[in-house]
Image (tube, rainbow, N blue to C red):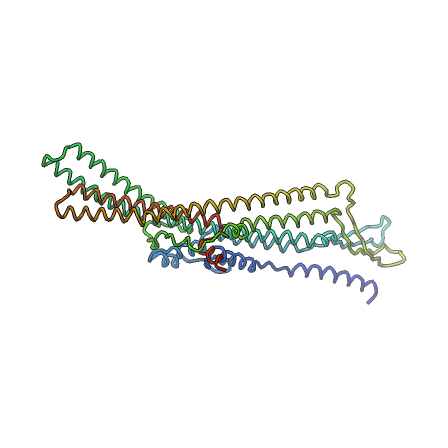
Length: 463
């Protein structure tokens, strides 16, 4: 083999090697999927997060879950496994991983060919240049760091969405349970109002009561019936809200919800260190911290772009006939001269953006502390009200109703007094349900402010 053939073969092998190296790029986001699932588990306490590499729940499987009613845990697991927006977020992680892989690749080399034909005839002159950018080599590390931090932010954002989904699903579940329990109370109140009207009508016939009394009793019954209808509608609306969070295209009104509203024991185990922990662990704070680190990397990247473009390559040329040599080869290079634009504007832009993110992080930290303190105060106040109604108000109403029942059986009071005592019990039961729902809402607000369920907060406090 001649020297000329050896050189040309080496050039071809180099080009082929570069091409083959580009073909080995693999985009596998499974590690990012696992990281998001693990973070969702840590922040929600749930393990049923969607797996993009597994099949989705079938309609038959969902029907089996719904058939015997839904507990709160089953509802939350179904939300994480079936919510389509959460699914989309996982696939967006795949997009982010592809961006990260792309950030770690150099641009493809450029091959230029020239065929020059002599005006007097004879063998043409052939030239070839294989050029690869070298400016990216010293930018590659920072570029990959920016892409990695951006992907970490996506994972945090997805996990935060999952936490918000859990909170919204809990709220819809509790609203539906409260509406169901309130509906039961309004049905009892309607029954009592109907009994009251019947009693008044008999008294009117006997001349003991007036038509005005009957009209007032009838108005009371109509008001009770209207309230009963509203509570029935409220239960249906809450269940349809729940269906949307579960991404179920079905009527949820006939699906039973088997768990009760949460009690005061959910507040146990929370200590004074709650605010400080939330300032460190809340996902939006962690995302803001990553955004600041990402902008630090961007500043370094922009500073490395003072020389925007530089390239080096191999050049080869076959001269026209009659030349002293049959082949010319060597190294070629190009560099962009930073005369007019030295990237100062982009560097300063990145620096100002970094400073802005630092201040936003400081503001967010203060806001988190205020939100958690306010939510904790609200939850403690709701707990106190619920305990007061449960320990004092409700027992007193039940005692009064028991005394009224005994007095009626002995003939010492009228049916109207007995019905009034029973209505008072129903009113207090409604107040008890309202206090339970307020505590549930306050606890959900505390979880939202803390960025994690109370069960997880208690486990964290015990470590």
